[in-house]
Amino acid sequence: MATGIELLVAAALCVACPALNESLPANLIQVDSDNVPLPTEQPIDMEASDAGLDEDVPAETLETLINKKIKLREMRDWIGGKHLRIATLEDYPLSYTELLENGSRIGHGVSFQIIDFLKKKFNFTYEVYVPQDNIIGSPTDFDRSLIEMVNKSVVDLAAAFIPSLSEQRKFVYYSTTTLDEGEWIMVMQRPRESASGSGLLAPFEFWVWILILVSLLAVGPIIYVLIILRNRLTGDSNQQPYSLGHCAWFVYGALMKQGSTLSPIADSTRLLFATWWIFITILTSFYTANLTAFLTLSKFTLPYNTVNDILTKNKHFVSMRGGGVEYAIRTTNESLSMLNRMILNNYAVFSDETNDTFNLQNYVERNGYVFVRDRPAINIMLYQDYLYRKTISFSDEKIHCPFAMAKEPFLKKKRTFAYPIGSNLSQLFDPELLNLVESGIVKHLSAKDLPSAEICPQDLGGTERQLRNGDLMMTYYIMLAGFATSLAVFTTELLFRYVNSRQEANKWARHGVGRTPNGQSVAPSRWLRGWRRQDSGNRQLLGASTHGQNVTPPPPYQSIFSGNGHGDSLANRWRRPPIGNGNGVLLGGGASDSGVRRLINGRDYMVYRNSNGQSQLVPVRSPSAALFQYTYTE
Image (cartoon, rainbow, N blue to C red; front, side):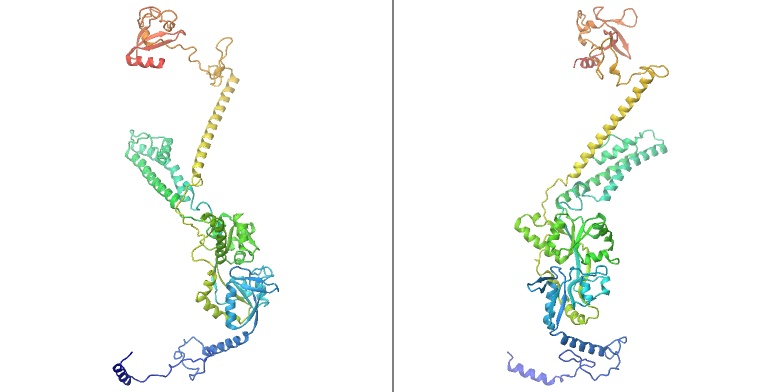
């Protein structure tokens, strides 16, 4: 509340203030209550720069604005109380209809919320029509389509989110205001394993494994060639030139951390070996760390994320019949035209069913197809499916979300309303549509029935992960491959053994047993040695050993020099060589159990003759005697 002194001071200051300028600025265009410009005293032929216009703007601009305003006012007056015919598509939740008992239809969805706003704004009424085939239409698919109804002026307006396709522009007029940029997304069964890899192959991508295999095959021969080249250039005889097999097994053993028996002497060869060891150490460290990270906190990815994944992997997919995806594929100059051959090969299915839940269960859940649908419909469909499965299992997240949605859009197209060619409704409705889009109302209406949180995201976010058989499947494959390789090598060995024995048997059959073509004696095949006769009536079994039947072991070492071995003892089975040959000294107490001592290669031996007439050497020195005794007694 101002005091009296403050009021006196304010009044004095106001007296000193200059008078207010109530004149309007020059070149100002005034309008009336209907926003129609009022005529001004400013001449039309004034300078363009003085009027605030560019020199390139024609002089009739002001008259054009006036005529446009007058035309809009006349159209507002014309449409008031007018009854319009509006066509739409069954495209839940953006546009869909309800059939009443009297046969009329009521439009619902985002499109008709916009139409109802325009209805209140311009005071008109309307009735709803649906094309017989519920398709957008194209030059090759024109009959009973939405485009046909608009083109033939059967309806005044097409109220649906229609993708702006190039071939349809010559049949209809799209609104200048873009309602949104439609995104068609792929939804598929949620895989049990991430597409980034599974099990032992996950830490490295495909080309890393290829390069590791190439290095494993190439490093061994490279080391072998470098060693041979070094020895020839330097003439060094100390460094042993390892064979190619040894070098290859060294490379493989280093990869498996098994070490090697090779011990190079030359410095250059040592550096070659050390370089491979360092490479393997770093490689295995990276592999171990990445494998641990993948098996615990790996990021989940889908096997089909882009159009190229569908094309390269020949994956079956399904979409709406007569929708934007089908026409984008069938039209030559559209972005999806490279998928046209998939239609010819029956990899693409276009369903006439407008119920998205039916398509999801029939094609995706049962047959494993990829379902391509626009984002609002996908979000509503997955949310309703989530609410239903929540009643089946309250806590299991994998049951709640059996489907996953790709991140990358399959197709992106601007979507608008459509008018007949030559219609003036676009000039009346498009400014209002632009206000709704720029204010975010259209986007809000498309997502108002969805929760703020993302429903069934691609990565469910679980940090606990137990190893499954799929993670260890590569281990099983390696074991099976190893056993199969061993079996193949074993079979090859048996085959070569059989072939060699057949060749040897044929040689014996042609030239006689034990004789070659030149008459010399040859040893029989090992397969046939067991068939030789031992005497007139007995045969030796194939593969049977003759050791222990004809060979008599020598007597115990301590009994050789005892001198009391007579009778049927084991020592009596050994006879002394003939006396008088002058080649040795008789030892022992008797003639029957003594042997001849001989010096052979600087060592002392007792020479005995066994029952078969073969000579047997018995070492005399203590260490050799102990080994001899252990060999024949243990």
